[in-house]
Length: 234
Image (cartoon, rainbow, N blue to C red):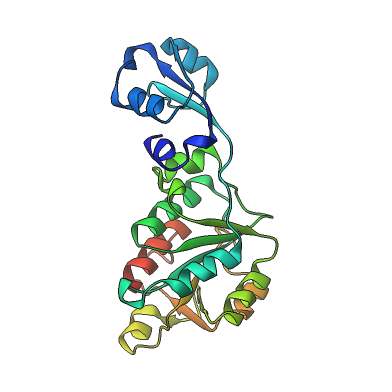
């Protein structure tokens, strides 16, 4: 909530606040941002958001504005090289809101310049995604595209390399990094929860990488795998 008030207060239509939180820092922050605040009883919050753990505050807001893919590519290409690896993240069919929220949070933490994913057969930014992102959805540039394979082709045409991650058949990512074979700027592509990278997506990748494991678990879920990949890339 605090991230929304700081970065996009214009999206907030109304904020309902438990009367017991009147005068708190959040209340004052909302007033300073010229956000409409309604003080209500706790049971009213529970009625308005029966499936939500409101914790004394509930908001109705317009959806976030998505960015054009070209704008994200521009941001990557214009970023100073000394600021670290210039990276976009692409998701190929992530459908679980908790996974998307966690990925947004991880991406923002590791300095990813933007997140790209398709409009069809993938989750959008829902309240559950926003909560799982812990506010990072208000900080990270997001772009939803009609066709992910075509979007990756656009990135390649603009000078970005595409690294796809696969459970099997790719080169170990630590080896690629040790041999200085991971180029910059880069688009990292993570597959969906059920099928991984689709055929057309995979065909647009310049490199395929695998996260090597030493335990008995065959693979990681997409949110955990994204964390591992971005941590290795640095």
